[in-house]
Length: 511
Length: 105
Image 1 (spheres, each protein chain N blue to C red):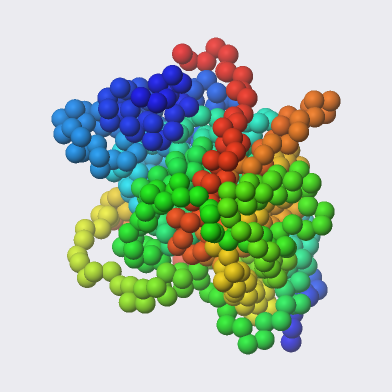
Image 2 (cartoon, chains in turn brown, purple):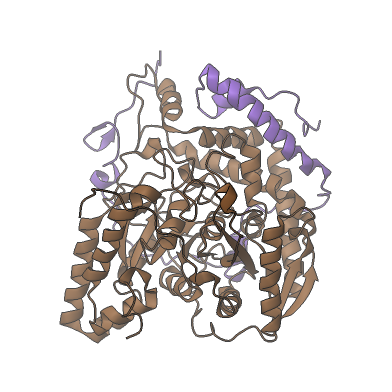
């Protein structure tokens, strides 16, 4: 059995599922091994908001018992048998606190599971707990959480990226084999890049959004983090496919993204959009991505230069569309049906206003105000409507580029992990962190970030090596080709095998 | 009249529309930040959007592939009132209690 010589927390999803199926290890042992690490290390990292050890162990024992009774047939229907999964705290989990990183949902226990959570459980995955995020997924550093700061495991003084920072850290630091995040403007790909793991943002409509707390409904899409392309592909396959409860989910079954994974890139055309390599781009980022491109060329891909001419306007367009939708989606938090209610308000309207003042953090308020402004009388045409037209032009840019190539390749983030606190008081600078990722969301296509290098450490300045990410962008609903290219890059490098240093274990913590 | 280059954002007015009451401190901090962000957004005025149909949703991609996407007309059991209202801050049986709205003080 491969993997038996390494610790359980290093195993891939496939190794875990195969070993549990073969009964060389039990789902319970795998689960316990991960909780041991969470207990020891998460004090320093802050990836989890809620751990559900009791629920996870019960689920694992049930899987072990079901396997003994029903044997191989039941197991074969469980491609993630015994695989630990961490969920961004934006996915509704029945009976398990779901906060969206917000004070306004501090004690919220959903009465149902999100469709993806249900599908993960059905596939045999074991949910370990809920991970930290920027409040309502609004942010690029996870610093906007109302609850805690999550540290980048490569350098604890730096941010993990965001908004799905906790999910990225959980996988990078081997606290979980897989995790799920959501990506509205880069919230899976950017933290994946900054933490040195693989993160997939599928095509809009590929994965059900039912039970995923809404931020911007025309842009939100869940997706997996893993330590290899194959793990991410396996997770996608388990949760994708039509869901009658989400009218925007593509009415087609989950795609087969596994069987073609090893086919390589010979004969594929990879587009290099010149706007994504601007003058002044961080030299470390540019060198690592260009090295990745050379590898893909050596593997047989043809590189073609393409242009996405409206890219310069993507940030402005995105932050109008996303905030307009957010201002509308977040109107539901009014202290009536769930969540926080301000005490002793003298009237209904005062109750609304005080509840929202107490419950929302600064960035959420900023975005609600911006979105409300963009939708308000007198400004709608100049801002929201115009942004929707620019969005159409950005989509058309991608369409035209995909006439000339099969996949696009760009940097994921314009810089490696930045220091905690560095950008949090300058919202516009924070928004620019998403400059290379949010076109994917506007256009509705798919993208993945894979590790493509490490910066040179600078011991004199106390700066360790930091991971860099390469983004691949695929045609709508062509995750198979996207992941095939990602796998070809992975096969030619060992960046995905580099791991962050172990943080200091909590001293005197529970055994 | 194009208002793409707004003069000064009336933060109190926008906050009222959004049902957010801001403390004076918040208003003093958020106002200039919002002004700077909106100033950046004003670059969209440079883009030629003549004759461009607005893109309202990314679902057009999947709906384009399946224009007749309707769910089967099947009955199912929804969450009951008890479960559905389990998170309500204040309840009376199957009802949610809110502060007085008619003749609101």
